[in-house]
Amino acid sequence: MKNTLKNSFVEGVLWNYGSVVILSVSGFLINFLIVYFYDAAALGVFSRAQAWYGVFSQITVWGVHMSVMRLIPEYKDNCGEQGLIISSALAGILLFSTFCVGIIELLLPWIVTDNGNLLMGMQVIMPGLVFFSLNKIILNYLNGLSEMKPYAIFQSMRYIVIVLTVLVMGILSCEYKWLPASFTGAELLVFVVSSGYLIHRGLFIKPPCIKYLKEHVRFGTYILLSNLVTELNTKVDIICLGFIVGDDYLIGIYSFAVLFAEGFYQLYFVIRRSINPKITEYYVGGKLKEGIAMMNAGLKRVLRILSPVAFAALIAGYYIMCCILDQKDYLAGAQFLVIICASIIVSGRKIIFGNIFAQTGFPARESFINLLTVVSNFTLNIILIIWLGLVGAAVATAASYLIYGYTMRYYVKKQFKIAI
Image (cartoon, rainbow, N blue to C red; front, side, top):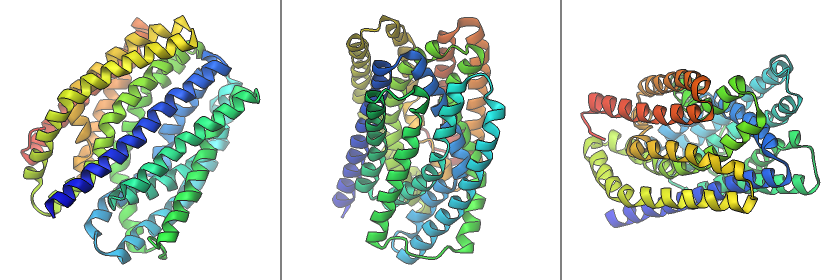
């Protein structure tokens, strides 16, 4: 039985890593295609629209996906309760996210007044937030059930569709302000396919339940700040560069390098997704300390080899990509990549255990840690961008990962008497 569980966990991690490989390759291809068919300015606009999309997405989903993720493992053998949990989440978020998108669309022309391309890019990407929010709930539902194969497939589908859409738009010479619409189309397709899969499996054919709707709102509200600042933390540099530097071409070069760093970060984040259900199971079973100690020991062994190998491959891949594009300007981005990835390596295990408080019912503590991180990141970005320009943004982002790692280690030790 123990070997079966172990094999299932390993298989889940492998499927997750397969989706991360697709995600990373797709990210590279999206950037490559935009630079190939357009230029760095187009990439700058695309990256700025994507950054704001990421931030707003945390508001439209309101942390409800994390509530689903927390509750599903508790009702592992109760299909009836599982159906009530997800149907309540989907019904509530459909209404709320639609309302939010309507408000955002009304306000955008009053907020983005000096960049027509950015305004249009943001207007066409925002409807995707409704389907993104619904997809987050479905994907976390599958994650909570440890259905990692369909989870990985649907996760990968999003990025494959975006790549193909950008490719077609580039071939047709569409104006680059329309490129962010690829997100909206991809999220719509993923929602149709994934919900069709779940309906076929009979996994959530249940009417919404007020009990779980209230619980989702309660938990989501507590965890919202955590998710919002976590997402914001990965986008602060792009957002601050947009306000302070304002040059889409330079922002495009920086974002090209940062995309590689985000792909590197996903190596750690995918393990987080895989161990989240296990953390809840250990906590409910009163074996959290032993379970975390076992996972921590395994992570130390794996990351000692994985991190430097992945880092070397990343730097080589970045250099090769720049050579293929024959764009010397992008080679300057290698320094940003090295600075950020070095800090991710140092904070690796803390990133992996980043949802330990949410998974054990302490979302407010997780929110506090993430808020502290993003405030530090935002402050450092403003100071260092003014002082050092693009390099300052990279240094500030790297520092935020180190601050996050130290803070996580301190509070996990304080709350659970566990060293990570």
